[in-house]
Length: 145
Image (cartoon, rainbow, N blue to C red; front, side, top):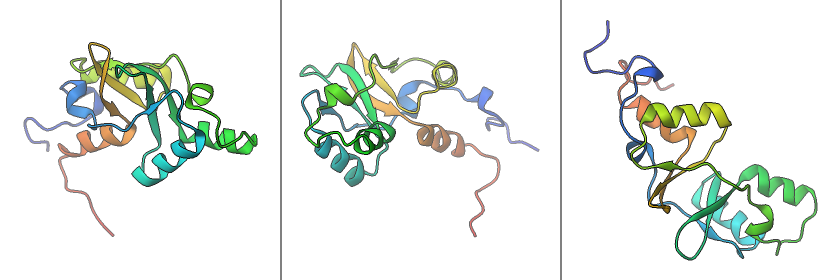
């Protein structure tokens, strides 16, 4: 039996992107070298980071596979974010509904969805964020061990 107000499936998730996002978010500039990006991802325990301009607008995204592919291709460690990033990048407004966020994940197969307000980076949504949001309303507490 479910409790009223509890989410029983993803289609019932209600809210906005700002409730799903992690903020603040780490980002890098266009001229940030591969070596610094790799250190950032490792030190912050994150799987990707937006690439932003001086005004905080999202220009692209760099993820672990981008870093790994660059390293496997023997690209120099001073290769810049500009050369490594995926662009254009899908973003979502902070007030987009969770349904719209889930539709973007599904449609585009992205794993990092920057959240913006008037083109300025506010946060990021990853699959882990969606799972955490959903887990808050699960009917049963998680079993450990």
